[in-house]
Image 1: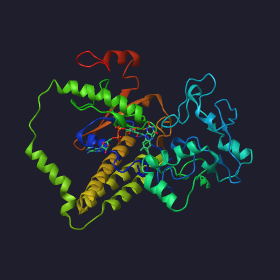
Image 2: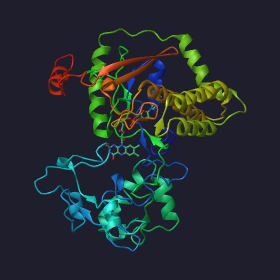
Image 3: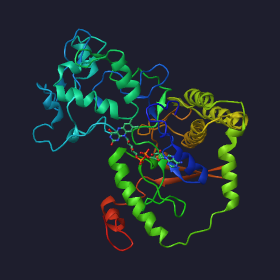
Image 4: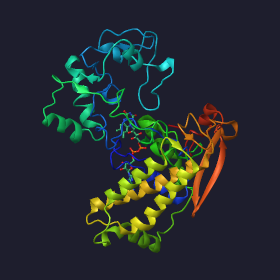
Length: 413
Ligand SMILES: Cc1cc2nc3c(=O)[nH]c(=O)nc-3n(C[C@H](O)[C@H](O)[C@H](O)COP(=O)(O)OP(=O)(O)OC[C@H]3O[C@@H](n4cnc5c(N)ncnc54)[C@H](O)[C@@H]3O)c2cc1C
């Protein structure tokens, strides 16, 4: 949403776009968070700056004077060794880090560096740096070499480029930007879909509102990373297979195939015109300007008008001359549809909401009782259809799981 570089370019929301075009129902698409990791124009590549989160957990951090920043356990006790940063506190079963649990409950809270406010009070000086040279060799190599190098797009822009230009984690520290550990100090209008974002609405079978279409993983609303994707993928696959046994296969429609082929190849027939990068940047700018941290109906409508004008005036002019650019062109068309889905979803919620990180200047009241429910959105032709669904529509979780978690043959896995 305005920024796309945190995710690899093959992961840009095509499933959301396909689903929206097909009439699938979505929810929570009004939720977005201020950029944290993305590479907006002003920012460094994700994982390319010194920090101690996620991939870089639990790097040794120092301040501008080279004084080490203490790690504390959940009770505020200073940890004395690097290895203690990887263990739960005494009596704690496990701790959680990353994803949507940046602010884990006390029960699951893990070791963390002292908060920035406290650091400033105690005279620690910006900028901070990650200093892997002070870590045991194996920990250093896990962060710089295994995690940075194998995760997302880190191999070429970060590991290879920095190494070629002389960065040596045994000798050099890497700077942090912003006041925390992000790759930049982001603006409120630079937003991303992260931290249990919106997605496809579904029932206990992970079935969507369209018979025969099941969804899993990042596609679902409030999804949360790999374990969620694997568990729901397995489950939705079983349910889809059961459904497939109950219906017969339709013959493919020649007309549909021809019109789809025409749509997909159209940019190849334009000898010159607009490149996908230009449209990609224009959509990004439109979302930053019209769907930023604070939203209101007139801004959102202007944003929609602008994106519709891109569809009318720019899309027919898109041009490319090789399969790679054709693929990127279609990804940008998907971004265009997902952006319109987001703008429409934002228009539907006429209040602000803390859990959805959603602020409307024309409806500043936060989480009023009348809006304390999911709002779903789907498209029927050009019409936007809304439904209000109670938060507890799925009933008791344990009872539901026992009732639905089995195959048609009665087995459960
Ligand atoms: C940089 C980064 C770091 C992350 N770190 C962690 C982490 O530390 N821990 C964690 O648990 N999770 C992490 N995640 C999240 C995790 O990777 C995702 O939640 C998970 O991969 C989602 O799985 P999925 O199968 O739903 O979707 P994806 O893995 O996105 O799979 C979707 C697939 O569909 C393919 N596809 C798209 N369009 C089409 C089409 N038209 N036809 C055919 N195929 C298509 C895509 O190429 C892709 O392979 C991270 C994600 C990113 C981007």
